[in-house]
Structures are given as structure tokens and as C-alpha cells.
Length: 619
Image (tube, rainbow, N blue to C red; front, side, top):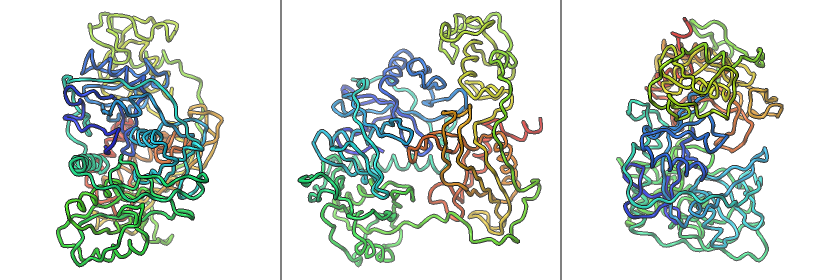
């Protein structure tokens, strides 16, 4: 979400190009599963820009400039990033910032995770930190951006306001991001849906689109009429002695970016909503150093009591608090309230409803097996390592040799098929000449044999192969899910939208353990947060079909994997693996609940993309 200030993301036509004759820094970003845009490095962005100048509808092989990104390709036609070894696709975008902001100067702000590695902040947060650093502010409060962290520049540390835990922080000089001036022929902006061009209808994607539209409208209005800055807050407790009060920056006009933290351990913030207040609603004066969305408890309670007097038909804006409840960030709600006040309209704050994550208690006698599904539990053990399969043998099993290949690009190395593979000199395999070309048997797509060997060698090496073009899977794809247990049964309660059916409850439980040779850091301990995890399906024909396929995916170790959590930043932990589950039982406030008419069809499509379908199971 773009925000006003020095590093504002320019709202542009088509989400792809800046206004004519305006110099802007170009930052390419990809959308993670939590709807947060993560920036590529400056080196990668320069590479993408160079390819874009040559062919605005071509493909970008990221491994050519970053060895850690060998499996990734960006398709400029559809504006998606494709991971060749897993088939995962993510939207990408081309964003623009002021040349004097952090990316224009090559400045990167990073925090240290539990594994000792450094992780870059999102670009808007990086720009905000750099802005405060340049103005010599001693500390920075990120709560206005939706994060409960304080940044202390004197000690170069980040502190969680709730847990008081500190992490190291660093400012690093890197290559400046590329600069562009003037107009360029427009390419296709990133589609949210599949390759058909139809927008995705899932709750998460609808949320991203609606939030973007609302924030763009708010920012345009704010630039026309900026509200006055609030009074300066007091410095935080525990800060350096003799630190003066810091005046809030104009980066977030009207928001208390440097609001003083509480003296004791911070209590979890309550989710709020911003909507016009009726004339009869009581009011309270804002506390100095706070905006209207950060009132003390008594004033918050007064605002909540006025909810019943809000005129009918007035839409409410559910606000996302710091622990992730609700669909909209508090910064967006704060800007909405500021605009209403600036227009002379009163504002009423109301609490957003809490999600219903679990059903009412169920006795053991009421828990029944799922009809048509044998058993009530599946366990996975450690992967039994088979003798290493020769990558060349695996690739040859699914390919047919092409004697006279056409004069077209190999979409893996981007070299012509009539020339040698781009991996010549990088990868050597006996019997695999760089000029050999093969055709995949089922889909017919052609590649250099050496390119497919390189792609397979960078994957799970499980004997399966996935076409980089159409995503067709050859063989049985398996994942890297750690050992655990999956339970499933019927409970006598109904999901919203399925009033006449009982509910299938799935319980996943994975303990902590040691990573195996197929994981990112073999021999190192991994964590498993939030287990057991409860998920829900309706007990109808399609719901039972999804359950059977989820059991197959579990047995193939495809439900979870070990990686870095995009929510907490923790590395070497168990995370979901591209198959969405409904974890909210009685509501749909987070987008992971019911009613959701398209969910069962969507998850069946996700399972098919992982090679799990009834047709494959029967074959």
C-alpha cells in the first residue's frame, strides 16, 4: 500500500510506468502469501530492466545474476514469477519511488533473524526508517505501518513493543536501484488470477485489490489537503538520557509516527473501525502524541458505545490490529479518519468483530469417522532416502529427442534451441551435450536437455519433473514436509453457508525436529509454531473429495515445508506450502473462513497444480 512522503509509490496508469518526463527509481517487487510486496535486490532489478528494454513481453532468468534465484523466472507478458522446481507462481510489479529516497541512494535497512541472517525490510518501511535516520530522530515507532516495533538508532536495534524482545538492525550501502525517465511502451500489468486473464475471486486477492483502490483514493485526497501535524510526543522510556522530544515527521501527514510507547508492557491493540459519527455520539479529546485511532481505554470505550447510534447504511471499515485480526491496516483507517475530519465530518470508532476460530466443545462420543474415507489418522515418517537417481536418467525418461529443433527460445536459459544451452560451462554431465534438444512426451514443449537437467538438480530430486511452460507434472511429485500426524473426523456443527451439513475437522500436528538432507539447513533444528492446526471442510460430496486429496497430498509431504515465515520473519520453521486451508470456523474475517463459495473449487485447482487429483490417483 502506497503512503505519502519522500518515498511515495507513484500511482501510475497500468501499474507499470511513470508519468512522462519524470525521473523515478524503479523497484521490482513480488507478492508473498501474506499480500506483502517484497523487493528484489538492486542487482536483480537492473537485470530485469535490461531484459525489459530488449523485449517487453519476454522472460527474465533471475539465476543469471543471483545464484540463490536459479529456479526463478519472471514472465513479463503475464507479470508473474515462476519457480521451476515447485511450479509456484506469484504476481510481480514494477514500482516507482523518488530518486532521493533510500532505493535511489542504494541504502538497505535489514534486521537479524534467529538464524543470524539479515533480512531486508519491505521497501516502504525501509524508506520510512531512512527518512527518520536522515532527520536524526533518535527512535521510530512503526505502529502506524501496522507493526508493533520500535527502532532505536543509537543502539541500532528493533524492539517488539509487546514482548520487549530486541533484535539487531543494520544500515547497508548497496547498488542504487535503476533510474528511468520518460514514457516507455506499456506492458501487461500483473493479473491477480490465472493465465486466462480473469481476476482471482479468492478473499485474499479481493482484499489486495480493494485495499489498493481505497489507499490510492485516500492518498490523492491527502495530497490536495494535508491536515496539521499533531503535538510532539514524549521520548520513550528506556531511551538515551537527555533525548529531546521528537517532532513527528511529515512523511505520514497527521499520523503519530513517533507516538510514545507505554511505560509498561504493551497490551495487544484492539481492532477498531472508522465510520462517520452521529451527532449524538459522545466525543473525547485526542491524547497528545496520538491520533484518533490510538485513544486511551476510557475514550475507546466511549467511542464503542456510540456504535449503536451510527446512522443506518453507513459502511464501516474493519481495522487490522497488530496481531493480524481484520482485513485493513490501521494506517489506512487512520488516513480515512483524518480525511473525514478534514472535510468537517465527525468520526466514530467502533470495534471490529473478533473471528470465530473454533467450534463449540465437542464430546468424544459425538466425534464420528468421515463417510467414505477409511481411518481417522495418517502419519508421515522421516523420508527414506533412496539411491540417488541420476538427473540425466530422470529427464530422458520423460523426453523424446528432437533432431531438427525449431528456431525459438528455450524458456529456461533463454537461448535459441538451435544453439547450445545457456548452462554450457556451468553444468557438466557425461552424455548430455549442450546442443541436445528434447520434447516432453505429454505436453510437447521443447527445451535443451542440459537445461532440464539443471532445473531438476535444483529441485527436490524425487524422480518427478514439471514443465516450466504449462506446469504439467511427470511422475509423482513429493515435497519436503517434516514428520507429523494428520487426523480427520466429523463434528456435529455446521459451517456458515452449509447449514444442512456437518463439518469435517482436520487436525495437523508436527513437532519440532532436525532438518534432513532435503531441507534448507540439514542437521539444524527447525521450529513448528501454532501446532496443532485445525482446518475445516463441509461434509458434502465435494468436501469429502477435497479431504481424500488432502490425505494424498499429506502422504506425499506437500502440505507443509520448512522455510522462513513471512509473518514473523523466523527462519527454519514449518510453513504452509501453497495449498490453502480454512482455519476459521464460524466467520470469515481473516479471509480463511466461511462462507466462501469458490474455496472448494480453488483448493481442488491448487491440488491439481501439485499433481494431486482423482484422475492421477486412479491412473
